[in-house]
Image 1 (cartoon, rainbow, N blue to C red):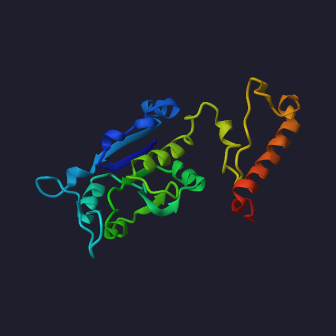
Image 2: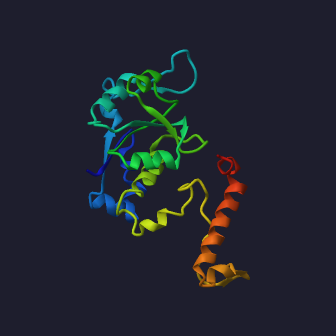
Image 3: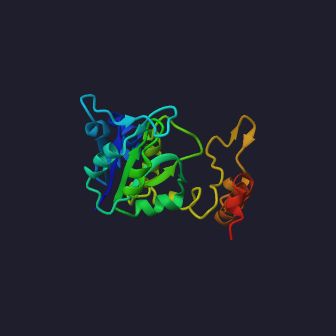
Length: 226
């Protein structure tokens, strides 16, 4: 069974976007994973297919209606797939989440817009709020692409070399070491000698040290975990 992604959005033309390129796009065309979009406005209210209304209690902007969102969600064959609401107030996306979802049947992603989504539908449909960073976007479409790309690249056979997954950032809690390639000397900056020594053990030891050093410098909280 392939990984199935369903995206509820006001802008289905956004997809597949970058998800249709390179190895991720090749895997999509070959059926390693599937992507469907659901136009939220199809479930809108009235002649103008309105999907939003003013916030209860007043305030700026508009809020996506619970009845409209629920109708769109209920139109999707969920199976065992979790429903993710891309939201800046959600828990931060992590590689642990990605690994869990990549091993499952897929995801249903709800792309928010305006001031957000009526809290009642989030609760009633058991939606999980996820943020891809500590920044506010105009909508959830770009965040959905980030999340899906992170998941799909972990699917068996998607990447040409699965070994490349083993030492990348967050795989074992550490950041990835620096990478180098030709030319050996560029603008007076030379590749570390150990990497051109041909000594595999020394190379591996250098990479382990670099991963620990970078993690301590850039993600100290991660390095200090027990």
